[in-house]
Amino acid sequence: MGLMYATKETFVINLGAIGTAAILTFAFGRWRGEPVSDLRTGPKFKHILAALAVATVVSTVLFTSFFANPSGLLDSVLAYLPWLSRVGGESPHIHPWHFYFERLAFFHRGSSPIWSEGLILILAAIGTVAALTGKGLGLPSVSLARFLAFYTVILTAIYAVIPYKTPWCLLNFLYGMILLAGIGTVALIQRAPRLWLRLSLGALLVAAATQLAWQAWALNFVYFADRRNPYVYAQTVPDVLRLVGKVEALAKIAPPGHAMVVKVMSPDSDYWPLPWYLRKFKHVGWWDKIPADPYAPVMIVSSHLNAAFDEKSDRRWLMVGLFEMRPGAFLELYVESGLWRKYVETLPKETD
Image 1: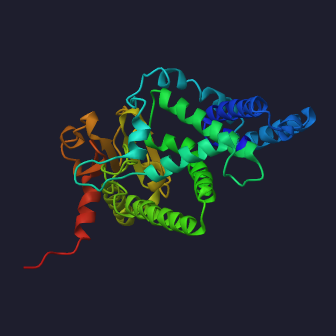
Image 2: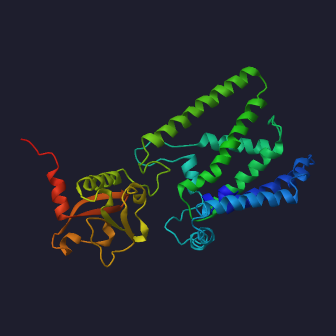
Image 3: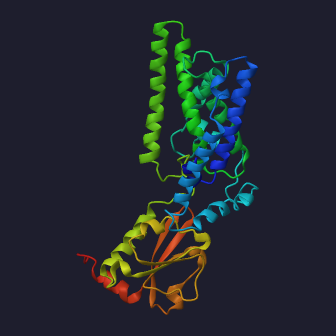
């Protein structure tokens, strides 16, 4: 729980789903007249306190960067303030309730292949029914399967209702669906009356799973930055690597090297993941607007700021390239004219 807290602020949604699912699992078992002693004789109060203490220590160590940043604890609480506007619908990432299901069930854009994880959805539905009825599971704990079913359904419903949606948020409930799909597979095969039918059903499921394997490969290695990929959303495009390569090349011929001053300007701090790519540089400044003194040997500026530093500096700085950061977002690269001249002199000479 401490790791969940330190990883993502949305962990509170998962905790709410866990608590509700546990109550429903207990109540459902009582309603069906099933033994639920494993829940009734759960952890004692002192065990719960010990668990909370461990979670607190873990999250405190991580939020304070091993006690080097005490204010990190306060920041972990303040991180929830933006939720008030996000959950309320004040965000460019507002989508209808079926946003996630379109990406999982059937997604087709332009000339791309048809993407679908329908096999997981169907098997997860079967697994949910099997968990609730307790038939065909062959598991040592029906309560665990039932808890997983309630947890996944609740979490899926919550994320469907929340207007703020991004594709990666569906991972919160997709892993529950995947586990339920495994339970559904067991239930299907065990309910088959004859061996040959079980073998045939198993072979059919393996064949169907090859579609998921191919899709995983295509999404990760072919369409990894393509907008026709259902999980690609406001992603960084490969062109940003050309920009990073150009800045690295300039550092090689600049006397300070990676100590060269680089200034990055982009509204709403929309320059990520440049801090990662420029991590070797020791003097990089970041602004969400043009500062009073914007000039540096190298400047990376969002095209939305209309900087025009080449004209304003009487060509002492040159705009040497326009690079796409993500779809519809471009960065301009400005270089001090003397440094750019040295760089051009290092380029291979063209031959007739």
